[in-house]
Image (tube, rainbow, N blue to C red; front, top):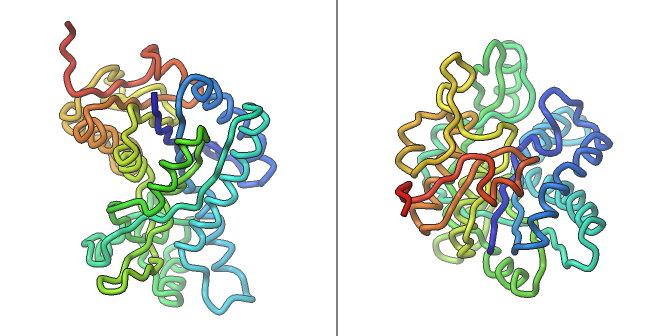
Amino acid sequence: MRIVVALGGNALLHRGERPDAAIQSANIDRVVTAIAGLALEHEIVVTHGNGPQIGLLAVESTADPALRAPYPLDLLGAQTQGMIGSLLVRALHDALPGRQIAALVTHTLVRADDAAFGRPTKFVGQVYSRKIAHLLARRHGWHIAKDGGAWRRVVPSPPPERILETETIHDLLGSGALIICAGGGGVPVTADKDSGALTGVEAVVDKDLTAALLAEDLKADFLLILTDVPCVYTGYGTHDQQPVLDATPDDLRRGGYPDGSMGPKAEAAARFVERTGGLAAIGALDAAYEIVHGRSGTLVRLDLTVG
């Protein structure tokens, strides 16, 4: 079975942890344990989030006095793909001796005229006081928005149109390799309508929607979205919280899950199942093997009718 595994943004940095390199290296063992068991039985493509990492690089770039301007998000995203990819390759190399493993810096095509560029919504980087946030916005041309009691930079998050390296990934899979790609949703680029020339853009593509598109294009059998909760819940965080163990795409869309957490994951799972007829699941990283074998997580399929 061909499985696309989408790791959550906190797989290498758990909530509240310092973003030290040593901490991320230590956390990689948990990730690799989850993936390695599946890789012994299936074809695996791994995608991953990069929220904490790109946020850290963005803050460092903004504060660097040697730079005339901060590095653009497309280049910072490429840097995170290299760093996280290298950590995963090294750990998987040790866990799966003899297996070909490749990390690929991946570019995601978005439409230059997408409406998302006029409505920045994706939080990036650290929180600021109102005064500092507005100062940075004027200095760098940022858009800012309130995040709880503080302020943060917001950037566009256009939907993915195409992953440019899909054919390369397909060829590598055919050689038996385990592929790490499309990190952080991929490096966002636009293409000139006449020449096809690529230009990086200041945006962040949703990683789960990119994973769903990649899984569709690779004709994967299963999209596995791993996060920090055991399954999808209705009423999450309330006294009425209930687990959702089986769902159709329509069920997920009726759930009204929030955009900042479960919403994109639910939409990604729904899209993949609708467009391919395959299976998707959402669940905890440590239960990856059990989820694929139907013993954990939320399973998403076209029809819940049995028999």
